[in-house]
Image (cartoon, rainbow, N blue to C red):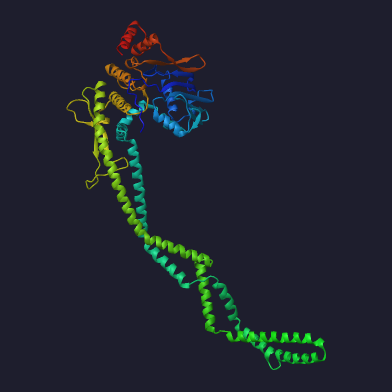
Length: 570
């Protein structure tokens, strides 16, 4: 994790300017911020929450058509930010392919009345989740609703891990734990499948045996068709053969007659040479017919016919037909079916081996997870001691002198008393407190009042600020439920915090507002036709008047003097 801590006393400046156009009651407002502690005040209903909402859009919060000012088509919010002391944000832009110059970047968000919107970083279109991810590297905003987050043990774990620089380790452990669950699910599926595979194995063996028993041969079906055609017509073939042979080679057959004709033509040749060619032709015919006769005789001698042979051939063709009908429709399909069955049988046979391999892999993964979880737990415990001391000291500065704050870490155990690990490690983490000496430690949610919760949250934000690259902290009424000296102590703490971080505090308490270095006031006006919200920067005298109003509701001489006195204490 890259961290760029501002430890040399130089005040940070991240949010330089915020421009808001056609947003709710805001017509067109541009607000300039300074380093140090920026204060935003205004009467109830003036529109402080509108500025907070506009900032939320810069942070990637979801937009709504209701944000668009009545009568307008589009609301626009833009923020000019400085990245000079934030290496993480610069690296994020580089990885995203976004080019910037002079360490300044413009973030822009458009919300249309149709509900659709768009967002840009330095003119490059991005999706909302990207804007949210990028802004989280620059800003940390604590709103009023976030007080409740302190009651969740899940958030206690997240805060400790962030303080301890363990977030990446926790994510790595979580991913490995998810992989372990997938392996366990795969093992369960294999074991469940194995229980049902016995019948399937028997069935596959029967199929393979049935196909192999037929001993299919390529082209055999066509050969059998030809043989059976002959065998089924053997009576007719025998009669025709006998008749043909008799006509050719009998006493008065064609061969005998051709022989006599040959002798006659030969004698004619002795009388006239013109008969010599005829003699050759007759002789050729004689030899051709004689060869035909011998071929027929040989065919007759080679006939292997009996009802048994016919039946064997018929049965063989029936076997081929039935096996192809069952697993075909043709020989190629039957062979494919055989191969698939053999492959499946092999897989079933190897499933036991796969189960053993999976069990071994799961065992290895579990051991690695426990080792990582143990290292994570050790880091948490050592850092928890430091964190709880820092938080406790800050709470004492914030007018809780007798507070005792403890980060309790309890190792999980299974039913057998062995270490047990979940996706976030083996620790149950909870913040415990007692407000007075002798009181037992109890969960924060059981004992802390609204004002105490505000101070606890401020203390946590402060200790996290020292280990976080975020350069701008925004507090929306962190002063909820407090007043008097407590408010002044919070104001002084915010001012101290702003030495290394840019801080923006939206407050209704004069004690906090008086500690600011750049005081902005939200005002609402009505010209009879439209109501609009503006933001103005207060000069020294205007600031005295605003503090006086916050103190007593008016600007009497007494309240003005009180305001000057309060401003002088910060």
